[in-house]
Image (cartoon, rainbow, N blue to C red):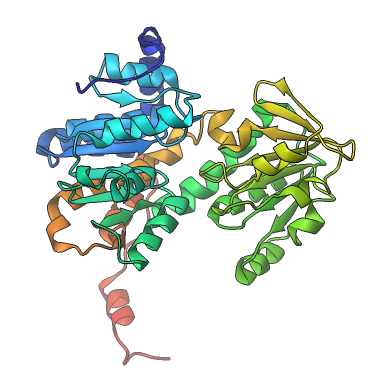
Length: 419
């Protein structure tokens, strides 16, 4: 143990039960964990992970530790930590954890520094805050790093910016870009957990409501799909013409956010960009409009601007803040503008995180074996890993698929055979 900072170790028993509950729905990661236990592919590796401290993440940490890694974990979002899980990891599994739900910005960065201070060989990030720290204020802690992984769209965007400027100091695998991650975690996980968070926070009826989804990437597709399935009228706001066209073809209304602001009942941002909903949009909203974010950081909603124009502010439910605007209308902000699916709910279901964290574990193994062959770039998850995760998931679901015949393989590899 290298120290720890969690809310209350007396919560550990409850956390251990919940970790075991999640494990039952993560059979792919469990298979990898058993393999790691035998082969110890991460023996001697120090690994710093900046992830949402949840039951699913706990099972990833256990798999990495079984693989021989010396693991340290901190939170990637001040409101995403499950305090009982953090306590259980420390008390029962002897994993150093630095995460307290609701921690302020100063403590958040202290926790990042605590994880970075083990001088990791591999970093595992969810939003690239740890990588950013090691590329800016604490470059001195980065000298032993051989590589890393990144979980989110937002983080990959930041890392590709570093790469483009020639500043990236070590190779990183973009786990988010794996098909078995973004097609399932982003779409089905974000879709279900976002609606779950909104419902837990507000207890509002989705059916008959107009839900405005800002961003139609895989996360936005998931939110739109689930909201529509519950009877909502869905409006999509996009800047990419291809994605906007896809949203139209999928049956949704598409319009600029300025127009959508006038008709929306519930607004969800899932873009990965800054200030998607701003002052001018708040002032156009109907009385009682609900605004929330399911993108990684709390920058998509311009909270500072609504703070400046408010006449008054009060907390009306645990995760709901009411802002009275100068025009007499009320706007309700959920979860302080942070990830609503983790601020007010429990994040993605374990079943879908099973694939994401299987990718994380296998990518860490790949990095440990191949880092010296890689350039300082952002890489996709190797196709062999992606396909392996898919096959394992199908096996655990008792689903069988076909294989190509030798003739079919020859046909696909040839140019001579035509009509």
